[in-house]
Length: 172
Image (cartoon, helix red, strand yellow):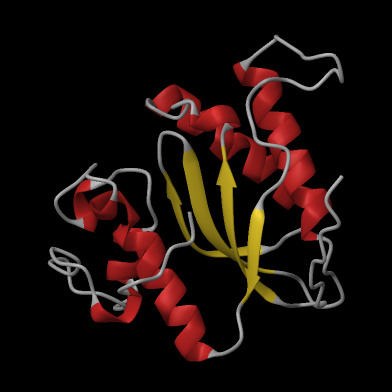
């Protein structure tokens, strides 16, 4: 078994990549994306972390969370989100009684500073274009890009071409 070392900083800011099992495209329609949204809402009732940016693609998602002051246990939150979504998506289980929806692990990166945060927000919003699912970020429905535009973080035309700030970043 792998020995993962995760950084837990109370009140920290984290970038995550979470992938479906075998990269099967599960989140291809509004109904499945709504299941995931409901799972987030359910967990956020007990631990009100903030989502700065998110994109849901058919077989993975990226997001940035701000943990509440005094709380750093994002692993438990991901476990609960995955469980809540999985119960609505599949009844099939393996020999460990796990539903066959998600990869067991997730990838996280501790955001170091404002520039790091901005680069990862850009990465999240550009991701549908990177994967050929849209020609610009505003065309992808399951993203926080529209919200970011309304906050003045982006112009609506942003992302028709890969931004220099994320050139070479690979958080897949």
